[in-house]
Length: 193
Image 1: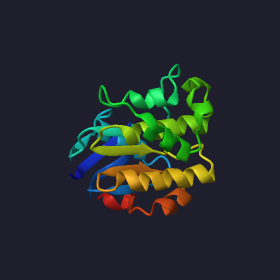
Image 2: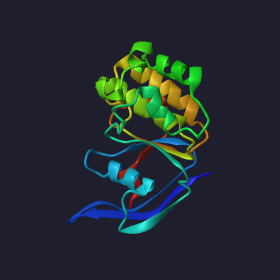
Image 3: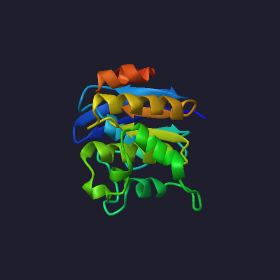
Image 4: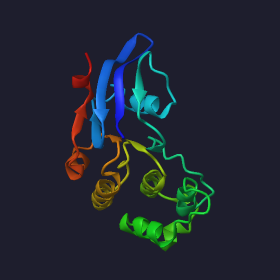
């Protein structure tokens, strides 16, 4: 499966964010552009939350997403937030606990309601929720925000393992994360007319 963006344009007021954006992603890639260029808006268009002014998108399918804000249910624990995206009857069990442990979250943190977690812990839960979703495409907006260097390295390793072979677009300004991932970089300004 391949995600295709063809002739996509979006303007806010009189400010064009991008014009005639065209690219294809069959596997993981990093979206890079200067701040304010429209990376978040592009991801929102791919999720169906925004409408482009022109162009079209194909091949997105079911989406697993990390938004700029964590969007967790604050009364649920981190594992319960991940369970929301699992098919009915499929429990996460020890494999999910192992993924949380890999990202530095032990039983104490996993028993707290998400509203009581630190910003970095919430980010880890949001990332695992996207990775555990039955998704054709992953759209990740600054998924490493609030992570310390060790957690960022583990998150990058987990992404490399779980995203291989499916369209994944990760928007970030974090050069260390880009290097840790080793994915192709899509410079959005170079993909526009």
